Length: 317
Image (cartoon, rainbow, N blue to C red; front, side):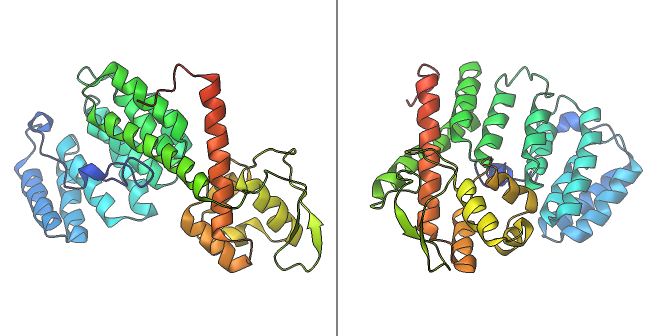
C-alpha cells in the first residue's frame, strides 16, 4: 500500500507497489467478484486508477465479505489521492479490519491514511487499540515511532523504535526508523555548528532592527534570558501580534493548513524548509536560515533535556 515514508514524509513508502496477493484472505467470492477484481487489478497495473476504481467497486458490491477486494480498493483510492479519496479509504479500512482483524496491513494502512489527512494525534490514539500480532510483537511500537517522526519528534520516535527492537530484533522497519531518527538528531547538531550567527533567544538583550520597521528596539520574546525559544513563539509575537496579521492568512501564504500553523505558533509543531523560505519571502520576516537556526537550536535544547532526564533510555548506538 501507500507510503510517505514512514519517516517524516508519508508513511509506508516501501509498500508503494500494489498490495501483495494473500491467499489467506480468499473467501471463495462469487465469479462476478473475481472477474471484476481481476479487471480492477489490470487497470491498476496500467495506471488507469479511475477505471480500476469502477471495477473494484463492482467487485466489493458483488461480495462485501471479501477482504482482498477491500485491500485493492484501499490501494486504488490511495493512488487517486485527495482528501475525499482518503476519507473513503478510511471507511473501507474500518470494514476490512472487522473482516480480517489479524491482517496487520489493514491496521498499518489506517494509520498511514490518518497521517496523510494530517490527523497524527488520532493516529497515535488509534495505535493504542492495535492488537498484538504473534509474529510481530514490536509492530505497534514501530508504527508509533514512524508517526512521531512525521511530527518531527525525533527523540520519542527513537525511544519507540528502541522498544520495538527490544521486543523483536528482526523488525527491519524499526531498525530503519531508528537510523532515520538518529540521522535527524545528528543533522540538527551539525546544522547548529555550521551557523556562525548566534540563534535567536541566546541573547535576548541585543538590539536589532525589525523587518519593515525603521525603529530599532530590544527583543521582547516570551523566553527568559539565555533561553532558546521555539520559532513559533517568535513568529506569533513578532509577526502575528506585532503586525496584526491573521493566522489563517499567513498559513495560506506559506502553504500550511490552519491547524498545522496554529500548532507551530503554540510550539507543538515545526516548520519545513519550504515554509520558512515562503515566510521570509512573503513577509520579509528575517531569513529562512535564521528561522531554521532557531528551530534547530530549540530541538537540540529539548533533546539534551530529555537525554539528561533519561540517560539510560536514550541509546545512541
